[in-house]
Length: 590
Image 1 (spheres, helix red, strand yellow):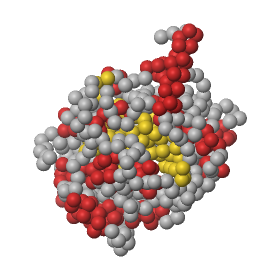
Image 2: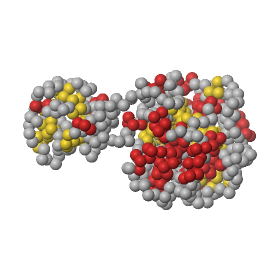
Image 3: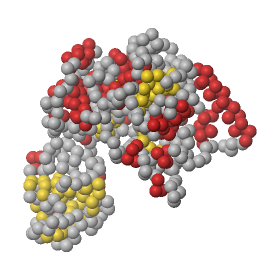
Image 4: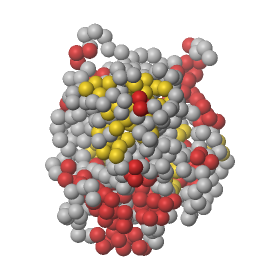
């Protein structure tokens, strides 16, 4: 649609009226400190009207704002920042202090437009008219002022005014000059509607800062966000609609990536996936399996997720406090997403990833300053505490691979166990069998040893070994060792590279590619007849004494036979590895 000057005037007038309404609707805004009343049960707290009239389904898109966004021009608008020749030398000046380029951030509009990468069906989605409002809670410490302000502008610009009660910035004792009381950031922030700052006198870490923000919040729901984000169109109604339908639902937006160098906004690899974890309690992502896909009415529907990504989610204030908030003995940061995820599911709630709600997040690079003193040990303690309180008999899978057995886990373990009993929470075994049932398909608690490993020596040409596309003297240092793993790949030992066959034809040669764990070109099997079989091409590895290539399988041919130094076929598990999705015939105890 062509935007005429007259139309721009109309749009500008409409936006002016909208902002006047927001400002009128805003309660008194002033900087406050940690001494303000933080009672979560104060008279200002509003219970969610679970059984109230949700009203009709409506389209919440702000088409006027979207149209103005599309007309925006400038650096970083809907694309990566393009530096000039002289600017390139300055882009990474601030990386050690912030983990991203402040130089680039300072040269991009605080109200910049970002690409809309939602599924096309999201434009057709309607949500209830009478949704609960939310308090957005953003803790921060020594963040770049322009990144902080852009995060706030983004929330204000992309949120319906009737749904946004307030934005609470929790300053976790920042020390940078432009963030101090009365300095540039605070001055600019308090010009905006619905904003306030809670300043903590000493640094307490992310978890406690979130709790302080929640105690000060007044809305029916809390929305926790990191302080280096940008919200996409219509991000908030899809989250609040899930809570309006079920106050024990804990929805999270699809988290996109913002490049720390160019500020390019882009989708995470893999798209919408389910959150999970390894048994070392590292966050992992799982593809949507057949069972979960069968629960969706279309590709844009929310999807159940066993574990939340961490810092970005909405929750009913009532449900948050019923669950005991964040465990007060979790220090600084780390493991809070596991505690929240486990107890939400085990205690009668549900957790979802909502693909029509998207928020971009800057993933920081390496920074020079460390986290809060003792942070590394705190993360280990937090993980061990969550394992002890929530993982029941499964905790030994975590503890067997960690150094956390003898850590002091806090003196209130019994109090938290009583809370679990009062809430009549289910067991972790129930959680693993009904919610995280596909965890072991991808990240098994017990990982089998490789069933064949060592150098791959040709039977037809003794003393010569496989080096992916040719044979070399087995005594050469350039000849790698390999292993056939439970993921059914042919992996170079102590490496992230796997043998990969990209061209499925006779006489084609394999190569190396980063292991992707998904089978396909990297699916191999070492057979008891000593052949190396590639199921996707239905060919076997062969050699002429010099080169290595694929050939029609002939187990009787010694040129297709290979010896490894260590072989134990009892370690081969047909049921493990790709294809991972085994959900078709599963039954659940709901």
